[in-house]
Structures are given as C-alpha cells and as structure tokens.
Amino acid sequence: MNPDEISVSIRKMRLDDIDDIKRIYELITKKDLPEDFGELVENPREKLTLEPNCFVAEFEGKVVGFMISFVMAFTFGMGKKAWIASMGVEPKYMGKQIGARLAREIFEFYKAQGVTNLYTAVQWDATDLVSFFKTLGFHRSDFINLEKSL
Image (cartoon, rainbow, N blue to C red):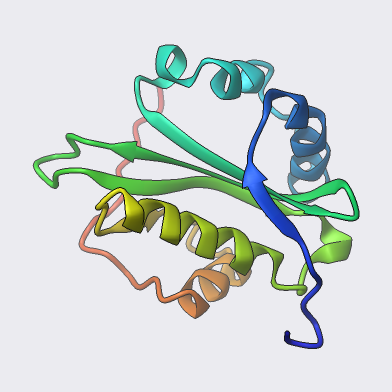
C-alpha cells in the first residue's frame, strides 16, 4: 500500500448515503446538491432511463468519497459506453488514493459488463481533475462538448 493511501472499503451507493454525498458535494463545490438527487439513487431507471452505477468509499464506517456513473447505449452511433458523471472525496481525505480506488472499482464493474470505453467531462480549467483523470489513463477524446443556454 502506498504510504499516502488509506484502507477504504468500496460498495454500491445506497439511498441512505445521500446525506453523506450531499455533505461531500457541498464541501467541494460550495453549492447545494440538487433536491432530486435522492430519486436518482432510489429509482434510477425512471429518473434517467439510464443505468447509473454509483459507488461510495467508506473509511472507519463513514462515507468519505463517491463516484456516480452510468451507461448510455445510443450515443450518436457509438454503442454502449459508460460515463463518469460526478465524483468527490471529502477534502481532508484527498490525496489518499480514494478517488483512484473508486475509479478502479468502476473500471472493473464495466469490464465485467463488456463495456469497452469510459468517458467523463471536466471543465477545461479544472487542472486538478484533468491531472487526476490522466493518472487513471484517460486522454482527450474525439468529442467536443456543445452547450446551449435556455
């Protein structure tokens, strides 16, 4: 084990994890977690018509990190591809390889399902996130993000 790494257990996210996810999300972003987030975990097929695959990291019985992902089957002719939509690690536990452990769990989960590619999107100036994903083997994809204000 890397000296900076701590021993965490990784498991599927449950509805009763929402308060911990909210706490971590708000510590990192300084924004409120969307009110309907719990419905995504409780009844994902109704809310997204996708298949979210969400995991948490626990340390000493406390949720200290999360990763939310899903599969999209018909993304512009690409076939079945997975996406990491959001992740977070409680700030005092950052640098302890928790995000990497969550990512490895996601990788193994999707490999077992036959998914061959995993995508994510980060803001161009979020250099810490870009570096994190690069250390996991992510690279710039052939996609560009498009946005329209409504």
